[in-house]
Image (cartoon, rainbow, N blue to C red; front, top):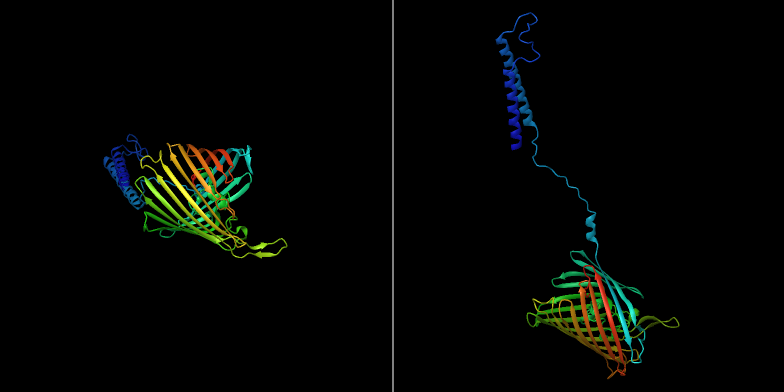
Amino acid sequence: MLHRDWRHGAFVLGALGAALLISTSPASAADPPEDAPDAEGVEPSAGAAAAANAARIEALELTILRLQAAQEDAPEESSEVELKAYSGGQRALQALNPEISAVSDFFARYIHSETGKDYIGGERSGGFLRVMGLHLQANLDPFSFTKITAAFSPTGAAIGEAYVTWTSVFPGVSLTAGRFRQQLGVVNRWHKHGLDQFDHPPMITVPFGGGGLTQTGVSLHATLPPVWSDGLELTLEVTNGSNEAAFSGAFFSVPSGLLRLQNYWDLSDDTYLELGLTGMLGANNQRGLVGGSGEVIDEALRGTYIGGLDLTVNWEPLERSKYHHFTWRSELLYLVKELEDDTQLTWMGAYSYVEYKLDRSWLVGLRGDATQPLAVDNSGQWDFGATPYITWWQSPWVRLHLEYQARFADGGDIDHRVILQLVAAVGPHKHERY
């Protein structure tokens, strides 16, 4: 409005100035000069000139009034500059893409058997690509997210895990559905590249195979009120029993169930203790099995029963946790498997390891293993192992791991392995354990 009033005042002043000039100036060029006689030869008088000037002023004042009225009716102009914004949603589409991480796991191994050979069964000395893992993770909506893990190796490709998790079905309760590594103890849940040692302990690989226990189903996880501990969690899983070593394999029909109770205690500001109890049951009989002559066989129901106990003590100084920590972790697993000849297989396995972080990049540790052979007549038979190791984190993306494995079979033979592992990872979830 101030801008408009300023222009209005300037306009009026200019018009009045012009009128004054006209009123005080000589006659315009349209009038004859004073020294020239008129058409009749009579010179105009001074009164006639004054009357003409007054008429001109009156005409100019009328013009000014008309212009002022027109300016009042005109729309008000804004003094602000309007900027036009151009936008497009093409680049925002990348927010819909999943978070992608890739992990490459290489290793070199030297084997020395009791007989002096550089191989043991199918294991050879040499350099190998163990796996190239592709990990995808994305939030599906405000209520759920998905994780997918694909493993590529020289022997082929496989889906490691693929599941959807609803983060808050009820307060403190989450639900997972899909294919996942089961929460049997602690380390079975971890991917191989995220282990503290090179591989899962024999306590996992002997009863379930080299890949551990991974099945398809649903998992319910609940945070319970801390009744007798500082933290209490409950996990319930129902899966399809497709593990061939412990359950029915491809010919499953009866699902397996797992129940885990996890307790936490804060021993001090720097130390906590974790105690877990796990129970699992399922069937190992096969239904719909096609016999040699083409007949369909439904075996009688046979059960598999598993009990587990795990203990973890972890020390991390509050102000120095990046540079020092100490972990002691132990697990025990007990398995009973009913067989088709009305006998049963009883098996036990355990491991324990300690690990200390020397500084920001270096860790040292030692693991001990004790497992029975997975056979019916294994009473009093034990295989032992000792694995010292050292790990160097070159950066958050590159890890080098060197370990020595000594395995003492029940028969007295000792096998030696030296393994140098290189794990390189990229992406937002580069070294996640699961």
